[in-house]
Length: 165
Image (cartoon, rainbow, N blue to C red):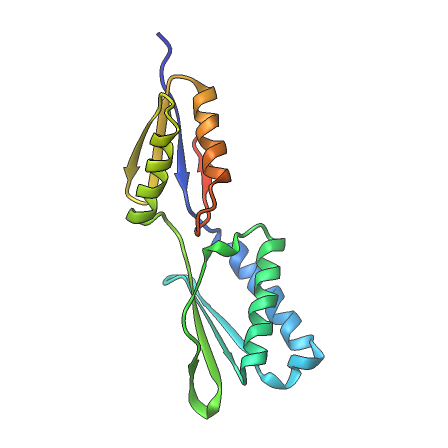
């Protein structure tokens, strides 16, 4: 009898790519004519996975976010990994916005994925393991069907597939 094949569904971001994308974004922000006087700063806290934007007004904040998103897309980082906090006023009438970088699948989201897999009615098992989901089954075709369904489902968080064997 053949052994089970498996793969993991994860939601991860490469912090080095985030750092590179942010450096490119900051360079563009400082060079853009309409943002030159905004003195916009973008700080990345890799440990807490937080991105902080500090700028002079709402226009510069929106433009900065747009630039950051475009750099993320060019580097293959899903913008679904960005969870925006409310803009708040900081010292000197400036605006500050904190953006959380989502990493790992939360329990509620993991339940959504496992429900989707169960609704497919294929012979696989899905189990939640911390911040990832392990999917096992005897047929690789069934596993690929699950991958296709998860890819096509429009979740509000990024998903990747790893450890396929």
